Amino acid sequence: MQTILIVIHLMVVVALVGVVLLQRSEGGGLGIGGGSGFMTARGAANALTRTTGILAIAFFVTSLGLSILARYGERPIDILDRMPGQTEQGGTGGGSGVLDQLGGGPAAPTPPSTDGSTTPAGPAAPAQPGVPSGQ
Image (cartoon, rainbow, N blue to C red; front, top):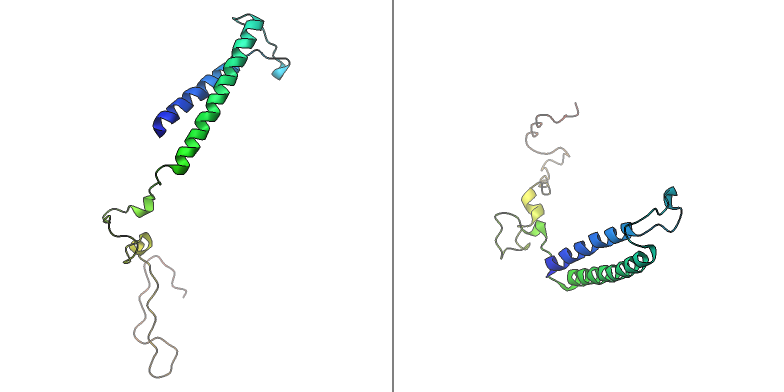
């Protein structure tokens, strides 16, 4: 339904632009006068004015219809909720969310040393290649 309404809306928009461009300039717009057209002045003014009004009403109706469909239609599916390999039943409950899959969680706390010193126990972790070590 929404696709049909979008197609109708686009056809109305193209027709409205065409009809507005066909209308004769009233005067002085960008310095171009309204030269001779393919229709008589009075007949063209009445037909084009009426057509413009009808197309404008159709534009507003289709715009309102599209906004109502967007508001009360189906809920959009969030792309972040559909990760590959994730089952339909698995939500964000058991640590299977997007951020959990990225890694880089909180660092494990260092256990306190038994001798009262403030230096961490055990060997220092080797520096990663390409990362400055601060020395």
